Each structure stands twice: as C-alpha cells, then as structure tokens.
Length: 533
Image (cartoon, rainbow, N blue to C red; front, side, top):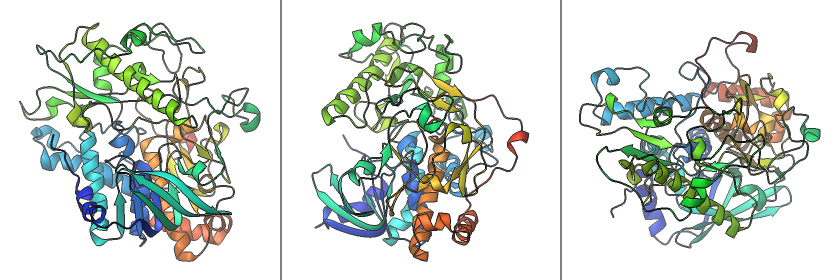
C-alpha cells in the first residue's frame, strides 16, 4: 500500500538515507515531537538555535495527530488564554480547511469554523490536518538546515556527568543508533522517558496527602497508581453496508467486564451508562451524545456529497484502559498492557457493530494513518514528573505566581486509575505555569517540555491539556535559548530578579501570556464546562 510521506520526512530523507552521521550535535535537543515538543522546537528555532527534534512515530504532533485526540481547551480560547504561536496553529487549521476542502459558503465564512462541530472542543478536526499545519510551521527551519528531524527514533540511553546531561542516544526503527549532544536537552516524550535515562529525580503515580497537603490526594502514596490511557480510533457510519471487523480475541472478557473501582462503577464497562465524572452516579452517554462528542468531520459543513458520513474519534469512557500501566513496568508487561488496551478499543467497536446492531460502522484506518485503524500511539494522560524547584499542588492552582511563564485553565480531571480509583473531577480556577515547575531540583541542562513538569498526580489533571502542554513546551524552548544566549543557567534566571524580568519580558514579546486578563473573583461568564476527557 502506498504510504503518504510528509513534507518534513521528505526533507529528512536525504540526510537519513545517505551515510548518515551516527553522532549529531545541536544547541537544543528535543526528544519527543508531540504538542509540547513541536512548540519547544518552534520557540528555540525562532530564537536562533540549532535544534534536533526526535519522534518515536512517523507523525509529529502527539495528542493532536498520532494519538487521535482533538484539542481540549478552556471556554475563552478564542479570545485569550494561550500563546500567539498556539493561536497561529489554530488559525492555520481553519485556514487549511478553507484552502483545501469543499466547505459550504456558510462554513467557509464562519469565523470560528469547527470542522467536526464536536461537543468537546471548538476545533474538532482530522489528525492529518494538524499534521500538515505543524509540518508547515516547522518546514522553513528544516529547509534552512537549523532543524534536524529524526522520525521513528526512540530514546534508549544517556551519558551524564554529575549534574549535566552530556548526550542522549536514540535508536531508529531500522535499528540505527545515533548519539546526540547538545547544550540543553528537553524531555518532550509522552511519559517522561528521559528522566530515568538521565538519572533526573522524578515522581510517578500518586503522592500521599501527608507529602503534598492536597485535599484529594491519597492517604498512602502509590507510585504504581497512574491514570488510565486510551487507544483511540476513528470511524464513520455507512447504513446498509456491512463493515463488521473480526471478533477480537479478548471480546468475551470485555463484553462481560464490570469495573472494580472505588467508588463503584455503575455496571458493565460496555454500556451506555458509565459513571458521571463529577457525581460518580450513572449517567446517560447515549449514541447521539457519543457520536457528536469527538466528531471531527460534520458532513453538513461540506458541500453535498463531499462526505457520505460524519467521522468521529472514539476516546470514550468505554475504552479507557486501567488494568495495567505503561510507565516503570517491565517491557514485556508494558507491551501486554498496550495490547490489552488495543483489544478493549476493538471490542468496543465490535460491541457497537454486533450487540448494538450498527454493522455499518466502519473503522477509518486512513484517518489514523495505520493499517489496523487504531491510533499510532496511545493517548497518555499521566507522565513521570520531575522533582522540581517548585511543585504546583492542588491548593495552589489559581495562585498568581511571580515567576509565571504561561497560563492554562481546565478542571482537575483524573480518569480511573491503575490503583482502582474512579474519576476525580474537581472545578479549578484559571492558573499560571510557574517557571520553578520547569526546573529540576538538581540537573542543570534538562528541562521538561510536556506533562512532565513539577505537578502532582492531582494537578496533572488540569495541566495536561493541549494548550497548556504547548505553553510548557514553548516556555522550555525559549528558556533553553535564553540560557544559551545569556550564558546563565535556568535556575539562575529564575532566582535572580533582573534575569527573570528580562526573560519574562522576552517571552511576552514573543506572544506568551503570563497572566489572565481578569481576576479569579471576576471571571467572565463561560459556556457550560466540557465533559471529562
């Protein structure tokens, strides 16, 4: 089958296909090209740095692309509360549809076009459109030679000299090992993979209430208690046609599975009455609600006949997987858990097609860019997290931090976990990202650029969304560049008033919002809060 090759992959091909260097060097090495990794690369590049960006899959974009999760955002996103670069990305997504798709005249002239009209977001759209937009944003730097992109490269090791990371080794899918040296390394992997490799102190799982003082923390710490992950997929509906997949090997288990969670889950997982995230009582999650939830193509936005069906992404309560983790477990166990999660998603589809008599549901492998129709990479909600100079705990969400380098807003939203906890879903105030949460306690030249900043198991629940991850990556990329230019460490930049003022002024000039335009006591009215994701 002919596979689409991305523009950036085409640019990278001569480099990778030739007598490729096994040793590479840059100012900033960013390991992981998800939402945070792309934002970090853009920030470092626009500040004059030479950047190496690696990615485990063959798609950059993470949650937005390879994981199949449309952007989940706060209700004021169209007016404020994100960086200029993130807004450029969002505007480019809409423009891509206007330039390349047969939109209706009404949709084409809609200022806030939402291609899928999904209920979870103001911008539900196809993963491949985000991929095209992110590639276009990075393409000038790849052409100029200041960006080296290594697709399908996974971090495997690191060399460390006391408090400094000297190099990181990556291994390609073809078995080619490369060693990367840089002044700064940014961990933008989905699970904080560089932290154990570089011996950077980190936390994983749930902290105890005694440690954090958080009202909703566990009584006893449990490093193995991690939020569920999800293997997403795309589907459309073709009435009168038969697209039933082969019966999944684990279907009988998942068809009959009753979650054993505390507080209790209301019945079988494969049903239309999952737990309400806030009340934990049964709620009706019916077909119409589910279909619209993460719909990425609403055919009524396109000229008649352009799309025979809507297309929706499935990241529902029914395919969250919490019976095992992917972090800090043996490789064989992680592989087994990932396969079990894939079986759950396929079983959900098969249940819909057979038990619910919707045999016209069709798995859209082309939308996900895979042969099996499932996402290239699981949607990861919780990562390893650095032990930081400053850790954001539940009772400080919404605090005005003097060292703010960005903003975000979302509920503290934790999905069922491997420790048997049901949802934890708590309202929270719009918050800031303190620079102290981006600086490890000891290591000097490694920075988090994803969900691996100084937050807790609880506060990860609101710091993990797309615009926040973008802001974390952008702040870290800008910080690394500023540190190189000024010959100051990130730690010193944060702790010296003048140095920090200069850095904050620099990122504000680049379009990073560091404060909300309202006090928490006087927020403007917002639409109804989004459903838990």
